[in-house]
Image 1 (tube, rainbow, N blue to C red):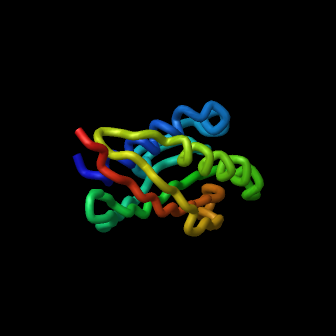
Image 2 (image 1 turned 90 degrees about the horizontal axis):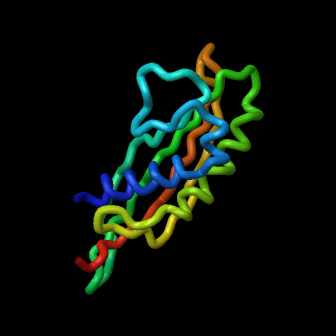
Image 3 (image 1 turned 45 degrees about the vertical axis):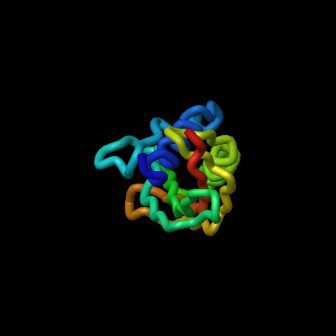
Length: 132
């Protein structure tokens, strides 16, 4: 299985396992949902590139996580965004790939039309293939 799919699955599982985050959203989706009631979260785009060493097969991934609220102000997003980092750090191995580092690259909060606010966080995740 590709690192992109495996790491994505591990991150989704870790986010869904965070009871505090799940108490703040109606759902967490693999990809941005077409129809969902805010507040919700989603794991978006995942870009991969080669990373590793002589004896280690690795991938460097850029993973986007989005959070949406239907509020007049973005205040509620702060608590939701704060839950993402601990969940990603807690993500374990999945389908032969293990996350060895996760680093926040950037985050942004912006008005999402008449539907409220959107917070987006981008991570650089490095993963290695585990020996079979």
